[in-house]
Length: 91
Image (cartoon, rainbow, N blue to C red):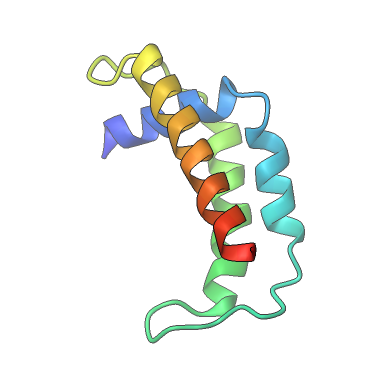
């Protein structure tokens, strides 16, 4: 769990797009949000700003298990794969 926090912190504080992504998620209007048995709209509305607040307040040292180069590669690849998936979804 601690290593996950370090990965999140490093990715947030060392990418140029993470702050804007959080702001976009916080400002989303949630129209069309589909709730599940375990995920409600209110839970998501609470979780996103809470998570953002925690990550801003807790800038941690990088992980020794997952070094910065590996985190950067993971973040970049995940963003690219998401963008491709989303583009295909919308076409």
